[in-house]
Image (tube, rainbow, N blue to C red; front, side):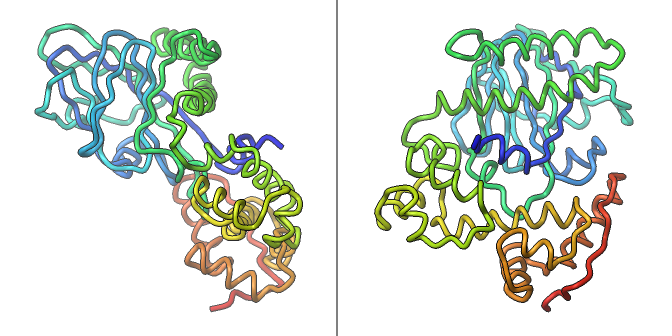
Length: 341
C-alpha cells in the first residue's frame, strides 16, 4: 500500500494561486492568521495553508520567534498550523500588514498583482493557498513543522517539482483561459512533490508520520492498519504480522508517529468514519461496521471521544458548514442508530 497516497486521498486537498507579488528591498510584509485569510479570500470551510514560490531574488520567511528561513529563486515555502507569518528582505524587521496592500475583492479567480517596498533589489513571488477539509484526525498535517521550505531547483530527484514550478510561473504570468483551474491542479501536485522533497531533506532525527513511513517496522504496521482498519486488531496480532516484539514496536511507533499503534488505529477509524458520514449515504450503524465496530454504542462513544461530538451531531454540523460554504452536501440518512448523548 502507498501510505502517502492513502492519507492524501483522505485529506481532500484543493489549491489555487491568488497573487503575483513584486517586493523591492527593503520590505517586510506580515500575513494575518489563516482564518482571516480564508475570510478575506472567501475560501469557505476548511483549513487554509499558505505557500509562496520565489520566482526571482531572495527573501526570508519567519514564523513567531523561530529562526528565519532563507529563500532563493525556485524555492517553495509552505506554512502549516495557522498563525501569522512574515516575508521580508534580509535584515528587515518593521512588518507591514499585507491586507492594505491587496487590491479590493472580489477577485473572481483572477491573479492579483501586489507591489511594495523601498525600491531596492526585487524579489518576485507567486503566492497561493492550499485548503483541506476539517479532519477528525490528520496524521500527515499534525506531523509537519510550522514551516516547510524546499528547493525546487532541478536535480537531486526533484525534476518533477522544478517542472511544476515552471508551469505555475508561466500560467500565473500569462493569464490564459482556464488558467485558474490549471493552477489549482498544479498546486495540488506541487504539494505532493514538496512532501517528497521534504522527506529527502529533513533531518533524520525528525519524527512524525512521514518519517514513520520510512521506518521498515513502523511502515509495515501502518500499511497493515490502513489496509484493514476493520480487522479486530490487537497489539499482539500486529506484532506477529510485523515480526517485532511488543516493546520494540510500541516504542518505535510511538516515537515516530506520536501515538501508540492501537490509539493510532482508533483515531484513523474515526477519520474514515467522518469521511463516510459526510460523503456517503450510510447509516451510523453501517459506518460503524465498516470501520470495525460491532456495537453502535461503542462506536458512538469512540467517535465522540475523538471528535467531540456524536456521529449524527458531527455530520449535521459539517453539512451546515458545507452549505454555508456553497459546497455540495452529502445525503443525510442517519437511521438505525441513535447518537449516544
